[in-house]
Image 1 (tube, rainbow, N blue to C red):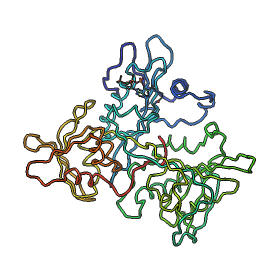
Image 2 (cartoon, helix red, strand yellow; image 1 turned 90 degrees about the horizontal axis):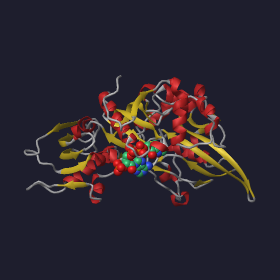
Image 3 (tube, rainbow, N blue to C red; image 1 turned 45 degrees about the vertical axis):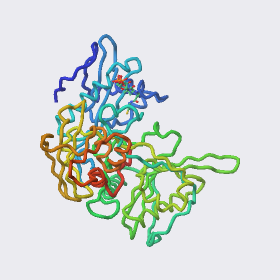
Image 4 (spheres, rainbow, N blue to C red; image 1 turned 30 degrees about the vertical axis):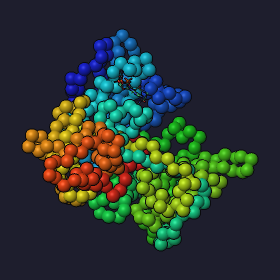
Length: 438
Ligand SMILES: CC(C)(COP(=O)(O)OP(=O)(O)OC[C@H]1O[C@@H](n2cnc3c(N)ncnc32)[C@H](O)[C@@H]1OP(=O)(O)O)[C@@H](O)C(=O)NCCC(=O)NCCS
């Protein structure tokens, strides 16, 4: 696909990439993200990139790349009650000598133009630094929960948990690839067991490159931890959940103080989750389980008798950008009947700016039309960034309004409460989260 005409600052030019450019990519990436790893070792591990979606910038008169960005083609990105094609922005970096000259801005412009050309109504990302992406219309759409759970922490009982058994193995693609994918998708499709109530943001590693990278479990990235292990919880021999984990072990004056770094925790129901967490919290020579990237409403928050003792933190998870406002609004479900007129501003993608009437039935179909504000005056006005924040159902429009970021314009004679009603409709019973960082 030829690149759309997107302006760059003077002295720079776009460059497409192929797998033969791996070393150039490593050199630029290690300028942007410093590491002590040897370039040869990095290049010897599989790359997660979808190469035709990786675009660099070169500077005239200088060798190598000065900037890079890429995206993952998520064909099935979960949004409330549905899935939408989404461009997962990733591998964003600018050489320190070339920063703050507008290269990231140009790359975002190119990324959004290419996403629109491909019919991707959304873009999503994880932010290395939280202040970077809001200016480009990305909204902070989800949080995740980080915990440090003491070994043996008391858990509430769940009937039937005791009927489960667990297996603990070294994780390999041959043995566990299909199982992980199947359970991950099933847990994302119905995390509470209610059909149709999915977990927004729960994206799977859809491409072969992402799978190869994940399963390579490259020793250089283990940071002193053991190779990836998997604990599988079963009922009558049928897998019902898994957790990937790596342990570290330190000997201190008081004895062994090991840590369990839990990766992805997936369970199909409460009893399986209770059995899995019970086994994970009971590993020998450890004193703490540190799960990475749990949804903020994960089952463990309700099973732990003393959540406070696990020192919960909630950093930002996925950020979302509506590339096509009408397609995105029509492409999700809503948690209540809604009929609301929204005035949306979008300076970066002016084609999105306008007034939209959204009509939807609770957990049913939605329709969106552009309307003439003279006849259909807006009831709420907001920027595309706030729409992105609210889009997965994890951030409330009313809370954004309380922060002055959404404005309610009650129509004369209309019953009050359009903000409250729209806020309820944009919410979702399950908190959004991705279980892995892309
Ligand atoms: C973050 C990074 C990509 C920015 O690239 P850049 O080319 O310097 O960005 P631009 O010149 O286009 O900056 C655009 C705007 O964003 C702001 N900005 C850029 N990076 C920022 C940061 N880390 N924190 C706060 N603001 C930032 C700039 O100040 C500028 O603001 P302005 O429009 O008000 O002048 C680059 O600094 C970098 O590679 N950092 C290290 C790796 C990294 O964090 N990558 C992001 C991975 S998600």
